[in-house]
Image (cartoon, rainbow, N blue to C red; front, side, top):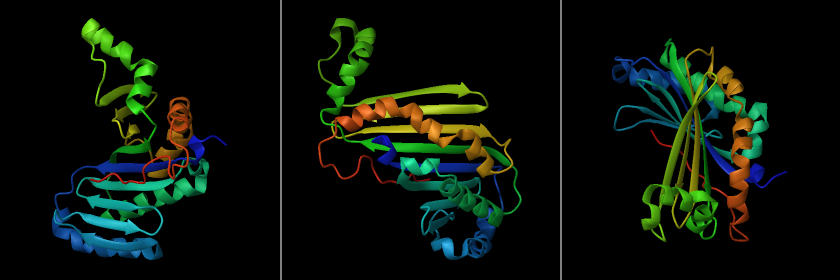
Length: 232
């Protein structure tokens, strides 16, 4: 088992549909249906100051029900759990139950995102040695600065029927990686979307770079990535 398999990943996602103009009028009724649909999986539910429904579950993290769809705020788990079909199905099941409580809306797109946070020693120097310096010199030539205080990088691609966004953000304290995959609403369910995404495959794509970051972390570091949740 690799070090990345044991690292914590925060999994967030979205199921978006056409705007429900009656949502804020009916949010109390929707919240009551949500309580019924989730049953024992529900920890607490509130209508926030914006009128959206804030749902906290026992095991799958936080969710938001909005006029435009359902948002999974962040399921924190070990990377190896993404290879467990039953564990992934639990997340998809919650999203589908929340969508059901809203009523019948045709999905416009599905999205899922993996978020990692690593804390390697001398993170910016490490990234500089792995190609950052060459990029700076390409842009600034001999005027490239000897030191940088932060780094942000993003790239997009189309892979089959998916649109991918990969983001990297680094500071002296940490390196954050976000890998997002989106598809239009052609899938019958959020579960079908996740099956096609192949979450373990996304982890494998990140593994060569992530393993370098993990190897540079101080010994005895408790968590190899941040336990966090994406917000709305």
